Image (tube, rainbow over all chains, first blue to last red):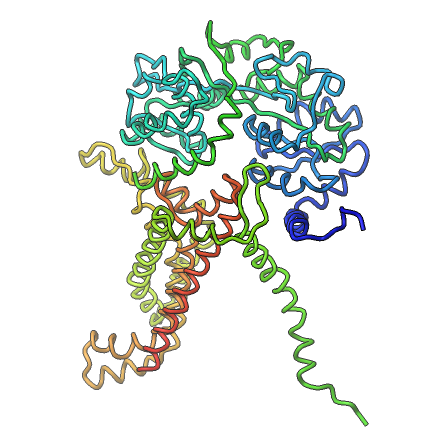
Length: 347
Length: 284
C-alpha cells in the first residue's frame, strides 16, 4: 500500500475538509481538467466583472483559454485552497488575494515560483512591488481622505490626522493598515506594528469611528460624522466620481500601498493556462482598463496613462510608496486582531 | 398462505430515507464540526489535528468571550420579553376580531417577513444614523446631531422589529384556539378584565407564549445581520463573532467551538424554559 493511501486521522480530516468544499468546486474541477480552461479564484462584484472585460474576453479568449471564475471572500477562498493543499491536483489555477495573503500562501509553501520564462511580462513589473511568488495586479496608495468643506488645512502626516480625534474614521477590516501607517510615522518602520498599540488606543478612546463596511465611509464623510480617515486613493477617486466631496492627502512620511496579487497554486490543474492568465493581467491594455474603471494604478512600467485617467490618478510630486512589511505583518496579525477586538468592545 | 410483512419493517422502510437525509445533511456536518472544535489552529496549515479542549477553555476562561455571550443572552432575553409585551395585545385583538379587516391585519403582520433581515437593518440605518430620520427630527426640535446607530438600542430595536411578527402569529393561533365562551363564563361569574386575563386567558395561552418565546429567543441568540450592521465594530454578539473567527481569521477550530457553545447555550435555555412552562401548565 502506498503512502498516499495510508489512512490516518490527518488524511481523513483533510479529505473531509476537501469534501466539505467539494460541492462548491465539483463543476469547476471537472471543467478544469479540460485543456484550455483556467479556474480563477477571485473576489466577486466589480473586480470579477472587470477581469472578464479587460483580461479574459480580449486577451485570453482569442488564445482559446476559457476562464471559470470561483468568486467569494478572500479568507474563505484561502481556506478552501489550504484545505486542498494535500491533493495532488487542486481545483484552482490562479488565486487573486491581497498581497499579505499572498505572502502567507508562499510562507505555507503553496505557491508556484514565477519567472520571466513562465510569465514574460514580469520584466515590466515595477521593482517596488515585484516578488518571486506573485504578480502585483493593481495597487493603490493609502491616503488621508478628508472633507474639503470642513478641513481647510489637510493633514500632511499621520500625527496631523490623529489631531482630529473623534472625527477620524477607521475601516474595521483595514485597521491593521492604520496601525502600519502609525508605525511608519511613530517608529520610522511600518513593521513595528505591535509597538503602536497605544497610538490606536488613544485614537479609539478619543472617539474615532470604526466602520464594519467600507461603503459606510463615504456617507460618514458626507454627513459630517467624520472629517478624515485613512483609505485607499482608488476609493477616494471612486467616491468622488459618485458625487461625495472628498480629497486625498498623501502623508509626507510615505504611503503604505495596497496591492492586489495573483498567484499560481502548486497543485493548479492547468499551470500553462494559469501563467497565460497572469501574463495577460500584466498586459498594458488590461492594466489601463483597470486604471480607467477602478482608479487603481498599473503595476508595470510600460502602461503609461493618458488623458483624463492620467490626470485623475496622478500622484503628487515626491509621493513615497511603500509595500507593506509582509513578514512582520504576518507574524503579529492574529495577536493584533484579537487585541483590536478587545479594544473596540463597548467603547 | 400470504406472508404478512412485519409492521416494524414497513415503518422503518418509510422513515428510513428521511432519517438518512437528516443524518447526511445535519448530523454528519455537526459531527465534523464537533471534531474540528477539538483541533488546534495554525496560521500556516490552518488546522492541526489534535484532541484538545483548549478552544472551549479559551472561551469559558476569557471574560471577553463570556462577556459577548452575556451580551447576546441579554439582548435575546430583553427582545423576547418586549416581543411578548408588545405582541400579546396585538395577537389577542387579532384573534378575537370579527371584523372584515382581520385578514388585512394579519397580512400587515406577515408583510415585513417578505423583506430580508439585512434590508430591514439597512432601513434602520437610514432611520437611526447620522443624517437619518431621527437625527433630522432631533435637529428640527433644536438639538444638534444625534446618532443612535452602533448602540445596543439600535441592535435591540432591529431584532425586535424582525422577531415581533413571529411572536404575534404564534400567539394569535394559540389564542384563537381558546374558546371565547370561557372568557364569557368568567365575565358572567363576575371576574373583572384583569382577573379574567390572569386566571383564564394567560394560563391557557401559556403553551403559545412558551413556543413563541422560544422561537424569538432562538432567532435573537443567532442574529447575525442586525448586530453586524446596527451594532457596528464596537458592539459584539455571538453570531458575528463566530463568523469573524471562521471567515476572517480562518480559525475554524475556535469558530467550531463557539458554534457549539452558542448551540448548547441556546438549547439548554430553551429546554429549561420549555420545562418551566410545561410544569406551570400542568399546575393549572
